[in-house]
Length: 184
Image 1: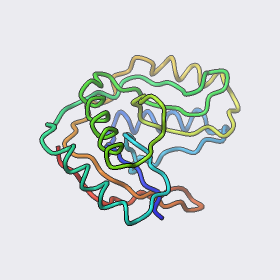
Image 2 (image 1 turned 180 degrees about the vertical axis):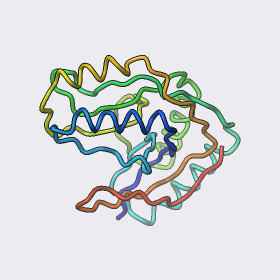
Image 3 (image 1 turned 135 degrees about the vertical axis):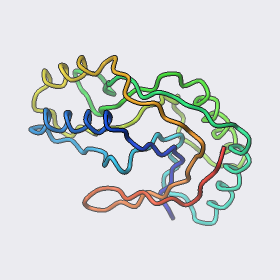
Image 4 (image 1 turned 90 degrees about the vertical axis):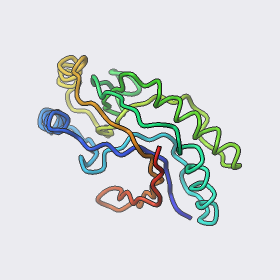
C-alpha cells in the first residue's frame, strides 16, 4: 500500500515565503503544523492508502486526461481558514481565476471513477494549505493576519503538469515523493 494523491506543485515566490514567515512569527505561540515551503502543492484528489498494483492504471489515466489539456495560470490570492474563525483548523491561500483548474480536476475525477477508483465525496474547494492548526493561542492575532492578507495578490502560478505523489509519513512530517509526472 502507498498513501497517494494527485496535485500541482507550487514553487513559492518571495511574497508567498514572506507571508508564511510572517504568519509563523505572529502565531509562534500557537501549535500549528506549517507546510514546508519546499513541499507546497495544490491537491486535486487525495486517494489515501492505495494498492500498489492499481497505481499504474492511475498513472495511465492521468496521462490520458492531462495530455492535451493545455497549460494555464491561476493566482494565489488572499488568506483564509477552514472551518470557521471561531474554530479554525486550516490556514490557506486562496485561488483566483480557478476555471481551468476546476475543469482539469473534474476530468481527473471522472477518470478516477472510470478506472474504478473511489474518491472522497466532497466538493472541490481549490486552496493552498499553509498550516494545520492544532491549538490557537490568540484568535485576535489570526483575525488581524487574515484581514492584512485577505485581498493580497500573492503570485501567478503557471501550470503545465500534474504529479502523482506518494505521501510518506514521518515523525517530523510528511515526505512527498513524485511517482509520475503528467504534462498538460
